[in-house]
Amino acid sequence: MQETRVQDNRMQDNHVTIVTGAGSGIGAATARMLAERGHAVVLVGRGIDKLEETRASMRDPSRHLSMAGDVADSGLAHDIVDRTIEAFGRLDGLVLCAGSAPRASIDATTEEILEETFFTNAFGPAFMVTRAWPQFKKQRSGRVVFVSTLGAVDPFPGFFAYAASKSAVDSFARSIKAEGHAIGVKAFAVNPGCVETAMLRRNFPTSVIPASRALPPEAIAEIIVACVCGERDAESGRSILVASP
Image 1 (tube, rainbow, N blue to C red):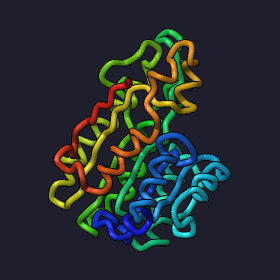
Image 2: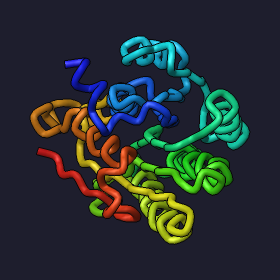
Image 3: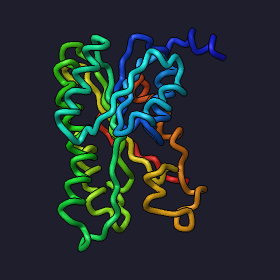
């Protein structure tokens, strides 16, 4: 099986991709799959221990790097991009999985909730993209995948801030398509419904959303990896909606 993968013409052994939220869930699954495709992966998240657990589970762990940091902090987000380019000499992809989903009704939504949600879900990805853009222009290539939510189209009650912050990244994908066309940069928003992650379970126990109604993280990771590897270029700028079972 490994020999088949090595000979697969979809392997991209010189490609470098940053994955945020790589310590668990969709981010971790995406990092593993990209490693199988030959990418060197920079795993980003707030906790180094979880990142290292993910890295250890990947194909050829020594090729990959773990960088702990909160991308909601512009300085840290910029540093991650800069250190990646310094380490590898290039940057081919951004997979922006890190997210925050505090559940609160409109009348219970505080300034703190708004700031946390928008800085993590919208500003953080924007910091990463703007910092990576000069490298993409230099290479005349690059792919960006935002993990959004089906809630951006049909928000569940209590996701006033979360749904709006994810609508922003849907817009980012459209803007990147418009500005990136001339330099070979493409972008996608992947908008899943319920996915079996710690984030889901912080808001909804299985008595409310049974496991049978949640997608496995790998199902979303497969779509993300296809976008990063150029297999869904016709959908650049679009929101790819993925309904729950």
